[in-house]
Picture 1 (cartoon, helix red, strand yellow):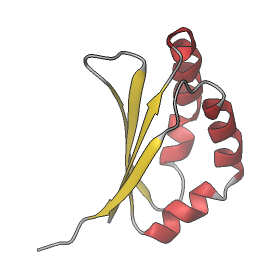
Picture 2 (cartoon, rainbow, N blue to C red; picture 1 turned 90 degrees about the vertical axis):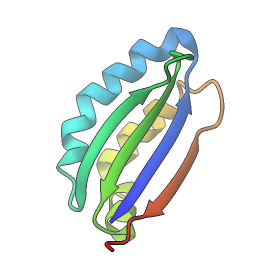
Picture 3 (cartoon, rainbow, N blue to C red; picture 1 turned 180 degrees about the horizontal axis):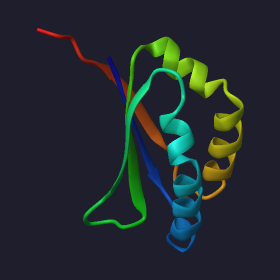
Picture 4 (spheres, one colour; picture 1 turned 120 degrees about the horizontal axis):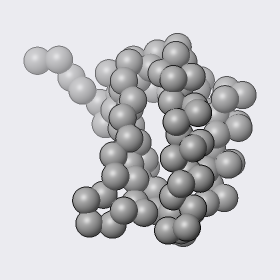
Length: 96
């Protein structure tokens, strides 16, 4: 299982635009092959900072999503709202 976290800082006046994009696409992202979980977190101290937290069966499943038409629509629209570059990382969960 691969965990993907993407931290995004938005211009404060664009937060509502981001939330609209996310709400309109979250179920479609959850339906992508290999997606097992998706959450949106908002920073408790900085309300214009959000993180997506997602679980993917494999790195290949995440890569396939990143090459999908859906990602090609959602990510460029989201990037236009950024106040700072995003920070993303992936971690693997190993069953014990």
